[in-house]
Image (cartoon, rainbow, N blue to C red):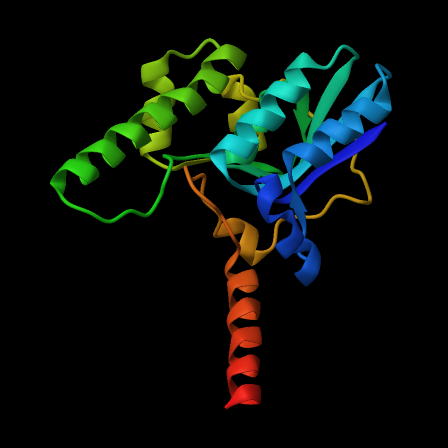
Length: 215
């Protein structure tokens, strides 16, 4: 069975927004439902995603690891941010032209110095949680993983294999493979909600239409 992890990684709570605007996304429920439908048969997961919500990515990662059947992950374009965590959930390959990116968790906050200190510590712990996926997959230490994340590291297919984040380079070029679009590349793993700029722009445009209509 084939499962796609393409587009933005989002919480189930915001799936209706993406459905409304016909924006590509993957959410935990999509993956849970697909794995349940697979019923233990072999599963191939195709990843081309710039990432998104950290907690949604973690839930998808856990669902794949918990699946009782055989799983093979194929990075067919980009596995970045939260999607790079998902790519570490099972045996994997990557197209020769694929890329793998890791970076620190990001979020937005406001408040006094105490709230800022609390948010900083929360982000550090979130980084460590993501690094756990990398260290579980590879022989790298937590310090190695956090250093790569600090540097916002972009890896070629061979680099990703060299670090052990991906098991091998694929010899098969799938005609359905497609690279990420500009919105995907602007996605960052975050402790909160992640929405592509294109969705925000469309929502603002709809809002302006309503304002003009009722004014």
